[in-house]
Length: 348
Image 1 (cartoon, one colour):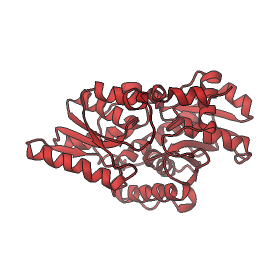
Image 2: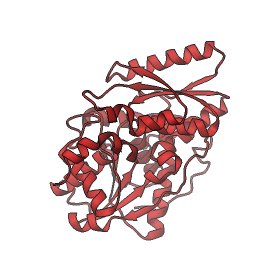
Image 3: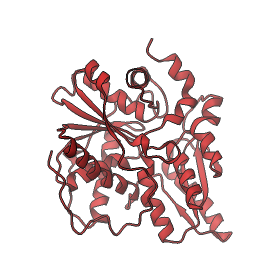
Image 4: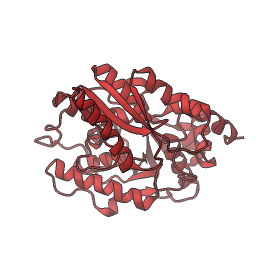
């Protein structure tokens, strides 16, 4: 992998940012999982970004909320699933920055338990003092965004100055900028330790983390491949989404096209039976990480990404990759909402 290069002027300079996270996050070896699977595995601990149990969304929110503050907004709004890590962290960040926060809760997952509806991230989102609104339209990004904008319109008429963080893809995926920045951090860490990773694996949901990381690596001259593990939609839809984010990043930063279609690698082997639903592949990974490495992952995002990685290694689909970095995006609070699934489908 190529070394970090100086980029002048820094293409991120025009974008306001507020510091929320504890960075750089650790890069750790996973010795027992490595021995078990015959590869050298490392974990980039973005579950350790500090704010409210941490997670990858902290890096994303630094740019969204930096923009909100630069525009003198006093209220932030967004929409996400009941057990959304993003909503937990947005509520926490808003509390820290003195912003009023409105969270729209989407009921995307059927046949859920009381624990799912009330515990984990949902409990914490309310604890941070956010105003909760329900959206019962299921899997409908555009509909959810329209509904949250209606809330913002009502607040504006009441004299507030709202800032909406969208769910659906836009021409300015500001959240991805957090992982453009993180890519340089990761390169620096691997260079400092003399590591030579040949693959990075990360969960791919909104696609902002995946796209930002991939774009950032290419911006720094690195050809390191990034495998996105699908957590919400199939690989064809997800690949198109990630490529779109990368294209918009080029436009936002007035840069040439850095990411081609061939660079976008996604796999959906751990997606079934769907978003927010557990499977043997996923819960096995959750249990292995916990019992072999003392590492907590969740069935919605980080556990699905790790499940995808370990399943592909065991199936021989990553045979040419010998040193792999798993980006841990957080999500531990969701474990409390998935207690029954984790216990029922865990390693016996």
